[in-house]
Length: 328
Image (cartoon, rainbow, N blue to C red; front, side, top):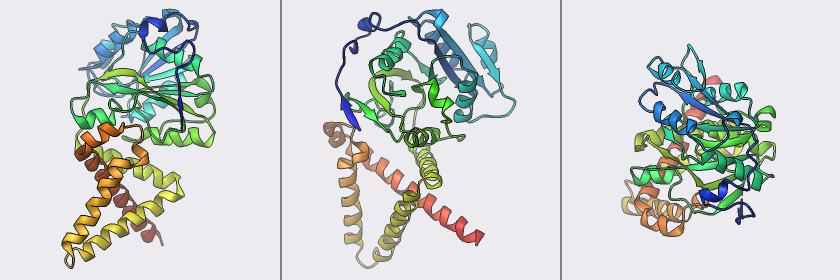
């Protein structure tokens, strides 16, 4: 994954976004919604208020709930699609991608508010980095350290081009050719970005991580939800990557070994486990976009995140092996 410097016409200030960017790029924004009546009004208001030519902007809402979302959407110039069956966020995004007319397909969650130059920012990124097939942003407004870390708010401000393993699904955009090439979000409650990340990697399509591309996120994340998300990521990895089963199995064996030695040398077993966890949380390459200063300050939260990933991977590997054993 390579760092990129600011290029000509690629300033981080919103005032400069207005001028060097071609404003004739047709953009479709897809908003997946499920029981989103409490938040979607502000979301759509922020999209309608975008400082971008309205003739080059399309907004699609994919709804599978039965609350007031439909009636709220009638107040705005949007294309509304209702599904009679409950859709995962990934499935809703895929439907929106098939309906879209735009050259660039942006995705915003229904509990997010986009700043007025958000679409200009997206278009400018694609124009400044033509070799990339996607632009990945972050969430702002996190209420807890966990929200801020998982939402990317505390990540390094350096832009990076590469094959990103995961991203914030509620603040991203891709070129139309990504979906025409057969890439798609995963049809699941959590982790739909992992499937798309793998599709992009297999096709050699790089994306731009832009931590200056922010939207206000009104949702929240707790540790129970984080563990469910980590299990989903691990489950997808097991289905699509051969190495993930080996990694998960090794973690499972490590846990079993620790449990065996715990009654014999409890202090040594606990010390070794948490020492390894401490080192991984502070220096892990998978968290290399978190600045070192933040990693030290937020070490307890990062340790909890590492524990969640560790046990999620081990749990899914154990279930995978049990299912494999039952089939034989």
